[in-house]
Amino acid sequence: MFADFANHWVIIGLSADFRSGKLYPAIVADERIVLFRGRNGTLSALIDRCPHRGVALSLGKLADGIVECPFHGWTFDGTGACLSVPWNPDAKCEKLSALALPVREAGGLVWLYTGFRPDTEPMPPESLSAPGVVLSAQSALWDIRWTRAMENMLDSPHLPFVHKATIGRFIAPFRHGRMDTDWIETAYGARIENVIEGRDRPARLDFRFPNVMELFIDPPGKLLRMLAICTPEKQGQTRLTIVTLRDFARSSLLNPLFRRMNLRIALEDQAILESSQPSEVPPAGVEKSVRTDKPTLAFRKLYFERIKGSRAEPWPATAASLT
Image (tube, rainbow, N blue to C red):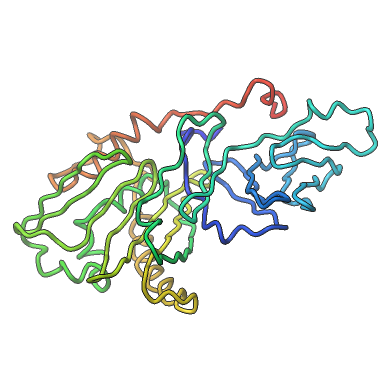
């Protein structure tokens, strides 16, 4: 399960967007998932597949934190435990569980574990806990593998060419000069620092393993960050989610303004990236690279060493319900 993306904490969305009384389907690395809040408000996640006949639980009903399968009415709680089986009062419900996934809420975000036995906890960016910060989010589906999208987010040299009318216009005058790019490993991934013609630029990137870029674009005396989250969805498709963090212009009425700005930038990237061949990033030696490709080559190394080939195995007691 979760082939080539297993055993990682990944951001699914904003906590505020998951309300009680509603089922929220999602797809991560070709696995259908359904999220919902229990009667006490705690968020839960199940593999979106009834262990009886495999139908999507997200098509069913949610009442008082209990999910009812739309096919035969089996019911499950947030732990996946089967609570009832219509027409079968003698059913051994303890052997009929659905499959639950670890889920956490931290920093105003929802984190899903693409596996079953996490030995770590989510590591939210420090900016999420800054005083007065508000979040807004948007997402889009790209027809490209997530690794191409992710390494694009870590790549600064493309800015004055793909984004010459938006975020790249500030460095466009220097595009014929020299850029020095460094990849500095951190506990959460890496920090990417760029120097153009010997001068530091005001923006900075952080790579947060495995699939998040944090862009630092703070105006003087203010906080403005952008999280770009590249999540594999169905085969060959990426869900790009952009979360904007700011401690100014805090009214929700201004969220559409920030969304429009982010959408314009994202569309510029999408048109270029969807033309990439192959759709999946190849090993470093397959494509020609230069000195300023250090961050993308570092990401590829991490991908092939720590992500690609990964699989998630359910607990033995529940694995049988999926076969």
